[in-house]
Length: 278
Image 1: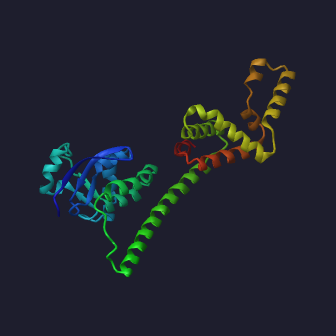
Image 2: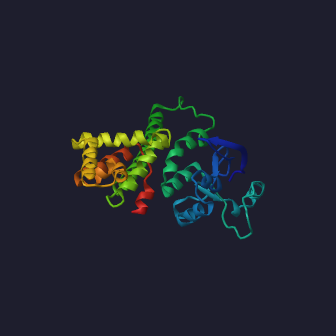
Image 3: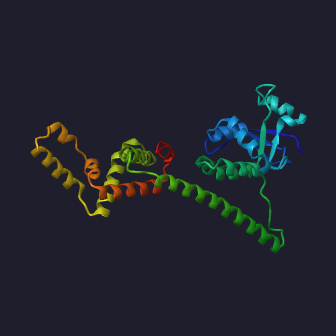
C-alpha cells in the first residue's frame, strides 16, 4: 500500500476539493467521501451509511480504504481534520473504480452530470499512456475496452433519463394547474430565467392548439362574453384565463397534460418533487 500525497485544491466543473494521490498505487488519484458528499449535495454521514450497507460491493484497498484502519495514514487524517471525534469509525477514501461503484449506489442526476468531468479532468489527469508500441492485437483490445466502458456510461445515463420520464408520466389531472406551472417554471429557468415563463407558457399553448385544432383565445373571448351576459361581475370575467378554458374541456386537458409532459422530457427538467407530492 502506497503513502498518500496531498496535491492541493483541485477544481473540476466549478467544484473545489482536495486532490489526493496514492493509497491505491503510486500516482493514482483518489477522493475522500467528505469531498464526494459536498459535490453531490449529500451529508457525509449518509454517504458513509450507503457504503457500509453495500460494503460487499467494494474491494478493500482496490476500490476503498478506511483511513482510520491504517496508522500510516494518521498524519493525513490529522492534517486535513478528517476525524471529528474518537467515536468516529470511518474516513473513506475511494479510487476511481470505487467512485464509479458509488455512482451506481447514488443514482442521482448530479452524479452523471459531473462523472465525465471528474474522470477526464481529475482521475485521468496524469501522464498519458503511449499505446503506439503495443501489438496490433493489444491495441485492438485496448480500443474495445474503451468502447465498452463508454457504452456502459451511456447506458447509465439512459437509465437516469428513463427514470426521469417515469416521474414525468406521474403527472395527473388532480393538481394539474400547480404541477404544470411548476414544470414550465423549471423550463423557463433552464432557458434563461423566470422572465422567460410567459414565453414558455405561450409555447405550451401553441403546441396544444396545433394538436387539438382549437383556438384558445377565441374560446376565452366566447367564455367571457357568456359570463358577462349571465351577469357575472366584470372583475371575475377579467380574471378568466386560458387555463380555465382548458379546465372545462376534458379533451383539451388531457392533450395539455401530454404536451407539458413532453416539454418536461425535451428540456430535461427535474420533476421528482412533483412525484413525491402526488
